[in-house]
Length: 122
Image 1 (cartoon, rainbow, N blue to C red):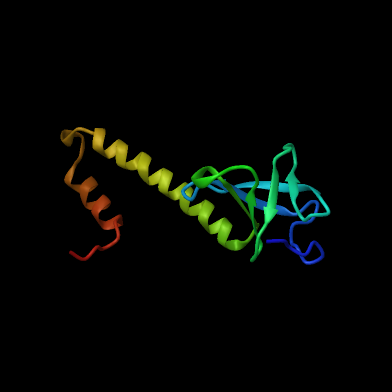
Image 2: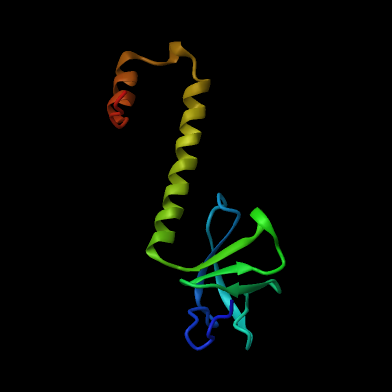
C-alpha cells in the first residue's frame, strides 16, 4: 500500500509516538527525513517506517510481534502513557502490601486502604 506523500501526516519535525509490540509502551519521537516513497526515518535512527492509513506507520524490515508501530501524537497517546504510569505505580504498591507483615497494619490503615479502593461487584 502506498500513501500519498502530499497528504501524509508524517512530515519532518512531526511529533510521533512509537511502540514495539502490541503491549509495548508508547514513547515520543520526531520525524527526521521523509523520502519520495513516503517512507520516513526518526531523529537519531536510520530505521525506516512505512505509513499506512489513519495516521499510522509500521517499521520496515521487522516481522510479527516485534514490528514497531508509529502514530501521530494525540490526546489518546497521552492517556495511554498516563495509564501505563498508573499501572506501574499500582504494581509497586501491590508489591509493598504483599511484602508487609500483617502486624504492621492497624485496623485504621486497612479501613483507609479499603475506602480508597473502587467498589467491585462480585
